[in-house]
Image (cartoon, rainbow, N blue to C red; front, top):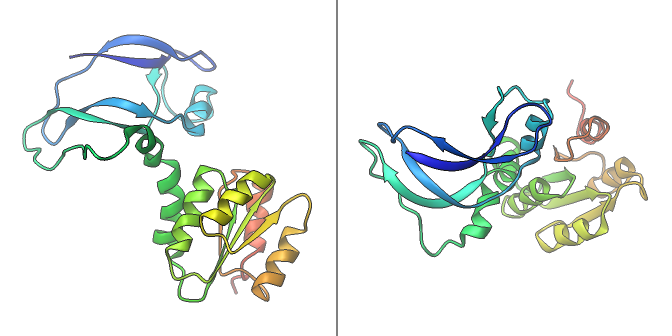
Length: 203
């Protein structure tokens, strides 16, 4: 079966539109014609040689589309026509990563506090999930005021502008000591180190 995809031939090579041939769907598989997709930073890291994917390769793991073929035994796939595909593509990675970290790993108990470092797509997913959890205090930390405005719109109870405020000091003021959970969504080592300091020390 012929398809088209963007291929990266080697480290630091540009994305190149190419015609490829793939197998027909096997047992338990489906073919989806991608209509909308997001470009994740992981894809750019892979292109730069920082992720262990052999090249040449087809990158990308965020997508929304229409099922065009199914393999043997597939009976439970169908694309809901009411879903706006241009919005659904990026939900496959960034939003679910942030939300999953809160709902599946942190799983805040009633009245607990959650601090989210970095409120881009992943961080906003975490903020929205925390808002729909039992957490009482949801703190967003970011450099950018526009992102913090969005964080407040989607559920943050407090915002901290890093670089202008002492984030740790403010978190301790807000929580009365330490946050119960810290979600690091910036991908920066120094921020990760601070996030560790923001929660109680394990004895």
